[in-house]
Amino acid sequence: MRQRTLRTTVAVAVAMAASAALAPVAQAAPAAAAASTGLAEADFNGDGVPDTAAAAPDGTVSGHQRAGYVAVTYGSRTLALKDQTRKVYQQNTAGVPGTAESQDRFGSSVTATDLDGDGFTDLVVGSSGEAVGTLDGAGSLTVLWGGAGGLSGGTVVKGTSYRENLGAMLTAGDFDQDGHQDLATGSTVSYGPFGRSTGAARTETMDLLGEHADEYTQGWNPWDNPALSTGDVNGDGISDVVGVVSTGSGEIADHGPRVVRWFAGGRDGLQPGTTLKDARTGELLDGGTDVAVGDLDRDGYADIVLGRSDAQDRPGVRDVNEVGGGVEIVRGGASGPDTAGPRVLLHQDSAGVPGTAEKGDGFGTTVTLGDVNGDGRPDLAIGVPREDVGTLTDAGLVTVLLGGAHGLTTSGARSFTQDTASVPGTAEKGDAFGTAVHLADTTGDGRAELFTGAAGENGSSGGVWVLKGTSAQVTGAGSVSFGPSKFGLTAAPGRLGASFDR
Image 1 (cartoon, one colour):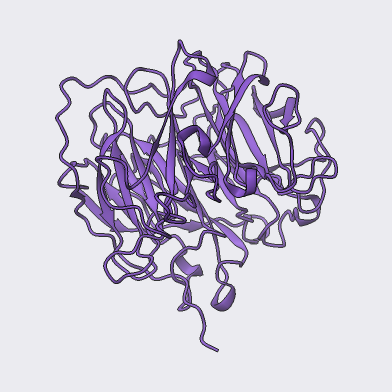
Image 2: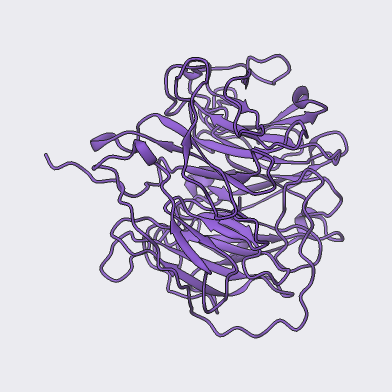
């Protein structure tokens, strides 16, 4: 039997070809300042209030299945959550380059950063299924440029190899400390400054798998994508990248155990990746399905939060397969990730965490950091999309853990489902509430709202829920939800809320 090939090492074209005529910005507004936690937030229109984007990579556009779209929420200090401006962008939107086609998966991943340095955050949208000429699945990136009127126009980077799947994952940061934002895709790193017509200053290869690659691995598939996150783990003032990635081979390349890879930033850019191992036992750390990076204990070193949801965990160091998933924290330090010291493992049987750990819950499927109560300490939102609610299988749940003086604490932890008081909707079998989670202060009051995707809602058309942050915790009071119908789109399977900007 012919073996499937699942990854190839390729380079992306260095230049980005501008695909729309763009009017010059008369006066750039300031970008939203990083939150007191040190976690930056997007501000596409420069009004000083954070914005955010939710992806529907399987959305139907003009009859084209899985063409994909992105729904952007523009924050406001004066509008209630239900009245905030929301707008859809897809490849048939005026000014956005390209054409919506079946299987493009526009919105495979999204990340927000100011690529051209004009003070407005830009949105980079991956289309991992995009065909480039005869190269099926080469993938592409579309940069939607920020401005006073919000996102507009666009510039495209195209994949260069068959099934490269460019755009399956994204993260951004200043990896070479030159003051310009850079973009990591797992296979490449593009370094700023970026020009709208000239592209990146340079592009280099990024080897996410490293020693774990073999001749049978090529590309990334949507059912088991790697995940990337950015933060300064070793406290040298330069952004690093942390990734979790599968290490299977041959027929099961996308279903193998996952490892943790750390790429230190440096004056010359990202350094070669290091696979994290327990310094005491030599065992590879379990990567899990998602990762977030932030300074939880405010010691000047960003910590790594691993969402070990139990799906493809590596048996060994602190196996969580039998308890329905968990989140594990690896502290940062001057030498990078500290794998010699004690690591924290939290799950639904941990004291103070709501619920009961059950096999298959998927606690930690997605993780994100932000400040929901405005105390300057990072809080953690955890997606548990396979949690049963009563007798309803995989209805889904989200848990929020607050930051404390020495890092995350379970004191005051709260969980939410669609059956929680004041949360819109009703929990139903297969909703997968908690498919993705994101924290963004779209009301501008210094407290982040909890954005939650439920990709299985209404026959997998999907939806997004927004819960308000307060001085105490996230609350269901005043929360809102929206689905494809909000934008006049079909209710066909599209998985709105499958991911948010990272």
